[in-house]
Image: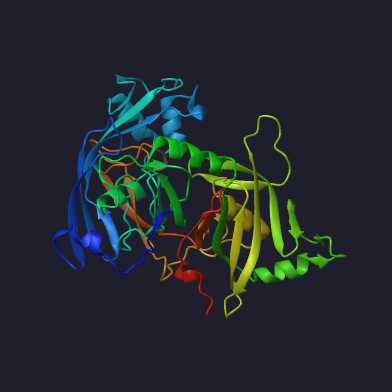
Length: 417
């Protein structure tokens, strides 16, 4: 049986033991981080201030390999269309100046990308966007093969975009949950803005096994979401009791049916903007050559807020597509209340406040590229804007094929009292 530990927000002992020269409103800790075997050790400094965790600027070589959809396109086209940090002129200059290389060689902006080529950008004074500081990341369960934690919103599981050391795995090493040199493998995805359960593997064999469970939809997942509107009205309108063998659906969006107390959305999800990573729902099968993946989610209404304006919904995804629950709720007309990307509003909520986002402005000299992809972003001139620290979506329980259940805490925004 796994060793279980219920996490809580108030205890910051693990963080405090690693802080130096700080007061309660501004604390710093210096730490060396090595994220993969072929990376040099980078020493970074964390600063905790006003409820946020910052990473002080550092130098870094951002690296990625050519993705399938990039093959046959030019280096400049990929940077200009898929990375949001800088203008096309800046990317062109960076490539021409040799700050971006392909397989270790300086190339022209018109270089046509080939499969498995390695792109490296030498970035100086990289800055990361801050994340919420909720104290030590709660550990739900530990075994010889698995580490199950409850991820706070605002930080990604692994380095991406303008987050590297402000990522879940890096912070687990920082707080001492995982020794720096001990491997830790991801087994599934959980969006940066989503909170809740994350299963990490301590061995490659465990990562492959659990990853296969997720890929084959053998792990039963339950999420909580807080949506706009009275979701119960949708169920009352849609469900017509029959002779006891089932329910009939009426007046529902395409691809939607009622299944005895639940609303089921079944169809296909496709990416409509790779640059910002945005998806939409399709009720019918995709046409030949069109990229779309089958997706299905069922929803139950838990209850409605006292003012009747929002509802808490239990979400039961049968597949695990990117942004699946968010896309399906928008399709139903009940978007996650504070999910501005999919029909909600940009909200400075007390439980999930807006936080600064470091936007890399074009500047002379060295600077990073990326920000919307895997190459990261670096500093030169900088602009800061506010963006969400999270949305009302939480991975609550995972049930493994053998029946073992892992459960996270219920978030404050799901309390209907």
